[in-house]
Length: 236
Picture 1 (cartoon, rainbow, N blue to C red):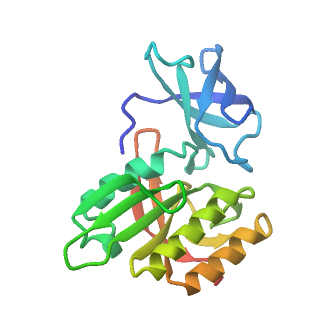
Picture 2: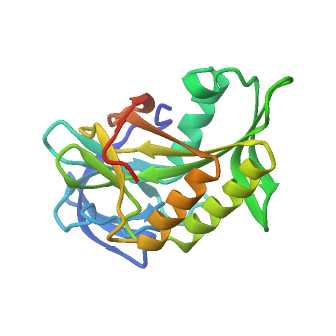
Picture 3: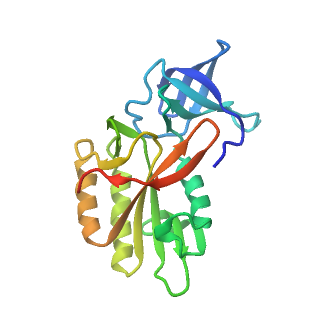
């Protein structure tokens, strides 16, 4: 997924009210950007960090910048926009680039299922069980090379696990796909110390048939693309 508008670099002043970030552009101007990330962004919202913003001239948008990347200034980036994984994954699914799901020809986003929920993607193909795919954006890294999820307690995520397990028990495929929006990571683990309830729920639902896929991403100020699968960090 290429960014439709060239990104501009800035320095973070502060993130607040979850969805707002004050920033300083290279020319010294201070602007407020929309932060499309409801999580804690642990380790990614420290004042002074180099970040990348996407400008817009949409008269319907109150804020004229959107925060897209953290630049770790060592050749690595983190994508902080939680809407990006679904956009990038949809393109990859439709192109048959996710090997485990390449046999499915029909990709439908945001389909109602469970209890007042919507699955990120419902994949269908004659002769195959329907595949329910839930996508989670992974940005936390507290150890070199290790990506972790979640970065805060996620009751919503635990609910999604239960709904996926119900689909698996009905004979469908149920897949939790973690997209690591952080370069430099080649391993993945659940952050059980942050949300033990989520980690325990995943252990239960995995035994009930929920599949786990973990993909990385190639990230630059020009684009974010699905990369190769990661090696799981440690067993659940």
